[in-house]
Amino acid sequence: MPLESLTEAYQASLAFLLGRIDYERALHVPYGEGAFRLERMRRLLALVDDPQAGLPIVHVAGTKGKGSTAAMIAAALSAAGYRTGLYTSPHLERLEERFTVDGGLCDPEELVALVDELRLAVAAMERAGSAPDASPTYFELTTAAALLHFRRRQVDAVVLEVGLGGRLDSTNVCLPRVTAITSISFDHTKQLGNTLAAIAREKAGIAKPGVPLISGVTADEPRREIESACADRGAKLIQLGRDFDFVYHPPQRTNAELPGGSIDYVCHQGQRSGERRTVSLGLLGRHQGANAAVCLAVLDELRRQDWSLPDEAVRRALANMRWPARVEVVDRRPTVVLDAAHNVASVAALAETLRESFTARRRILVFATTQDKDAAGMLRLLLPDFDHVILTRYENNPRGVGTAELAALAARLSEAPVQVGATPAAAWRAVHAVAEEDDLVCVTGSFFIAAEMRAQWRAKPLNQGAPLGQPLFF
Image (cartoon, rainbow, N blue to C red; front, side, top):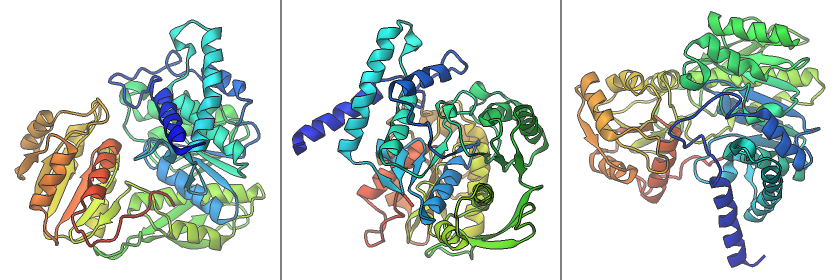
């Protein structure tokens, strides 16, 4: 296809997808069978010959850590020689980041072909049903596109990250080899419930009869819900603290190239029961140690299913792992960290990592977040650790919290100097004006602000001579 025609077709494909209902950008996100309908997803997949059928799938849910854990599992499978598809969300820069094969994006012609096939399926669904909910959503279409892409690429394995919840998520039409729940904490409470037990019930909706479930959840209330769901559905449960354990060893405090520390991992079942394995990590933070432990437990379960996963390949994958906007160091002197923390639990993990792994003369926070998130709770954890605060609002999603509201919160919670940048570009100019080479700049509060500030950094890094940040994919 000529380049000009391909460009037009590619843009038309993106416009088709973005023209659907997109709950990632909706001001009000409903929840329940009315809005999230697995039957609609099944109809869509049936019209494209059920690409999920026969794919060996690992299905990963959790309040935080599910994307990093899914990426670790996929990297390990790729390192072991399996052609591996990975589906995650949301994306930072390009839609195609959501579905990769061995870390590589599909090319524009592939995306156009995928969307063309989905257009026909959507047209058939809309002809068959006149109700407003007859047409698939943006997330359902991207999930279907991922599964189609993986079938076309003839992958050996697929790792699917849940989008929202688990029970009603469009990824939950799969029949996986293993499922995993990384963690349970408060997020999306309007949709999933305002107790840890209610949230755990929704996440545990991915449990399937006869399919082992790996759980990194240790708190009593959600743990009991996961145990109950697995017992009801006949799913073998493999739990952190009972069936496997880990000890995290942080890296040395430094602002140079940062290794991610290591974990000692111990499995308490099977042929390797009691064996201690030390694994180096490429991702920073104690929370990534917990994610790595869940990853290793998943891989151990796949080994029990006769997958060939040499220890050396797994160690290499986790040590070399890179994943964007997860304590991502993109610049040095001054150090710039991007992190997609967007709830109290993930912000707490970020704050601990910054204290544990970084030194700085001053710390500068750039913060924006999303409506329905606990902005006060996040700022209460972050502000004591920062000397200067820049508040902003991302532009590519209407759900951003206004800067006036954030400034009022910050004034109540801290005496640190506060600036307001009306846009990410203005906030980045403010960073350029105040940051010096011995400082640390941390951008956080939302995946969307991490994405938009990453673009600002790419256009104008603080240190023009600094190396580029970590690659987008492992």
